[in-house]
Length: 241
Image (cartoon, rainbow, N blue to C red; front, side):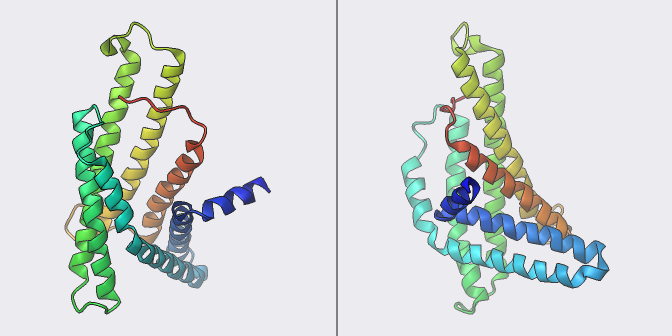
């Protein structure tokens, strides 16, 4: 009963609902891709699952039509990151916010072109939105990797922080932060693999992933996101590097 209540509570929020739709969509793509490729007798079921996956992805695209304002407010509040002590992290975050802000209108135009609302070729807009998403993910990978290295250094060399010994509670907070950043790093890497796949042919491994591998990468990223969201409540305040 508690699990059902937790699920119902998550579905009441936009982010919680989006995580569930994303996870379900990629799981359908994973299972459907495996069935189509490896189980000819069940290829029809696999094809139907791939159709469900595509529709869930389209659902998320439509819901993101309303994300621009929330992203703009967040970008405006963060500004140039004056409260962030680490200059490298600050500018990675600023560039990431710019990429995310530009991503939404590009995706909206691509969606509108596909829906025949606008008379233009959607391909270039999908490519641009995917490139912006990939750039944002790459910045996120760099930010998480840098943060993990800094936190690890802080644990191993407390004298670098002008203290002789870190309190146990502080060590625990740093370890929790490191764990969270590692999960974010893995999630972003999985999404980045898919982002490159969706770029035009000729860019690294673009277009080379079978449907099941796209589903696998997306499922890994989605499950990590759900796990992080579930662990977010009740944790000690994370320490800054």
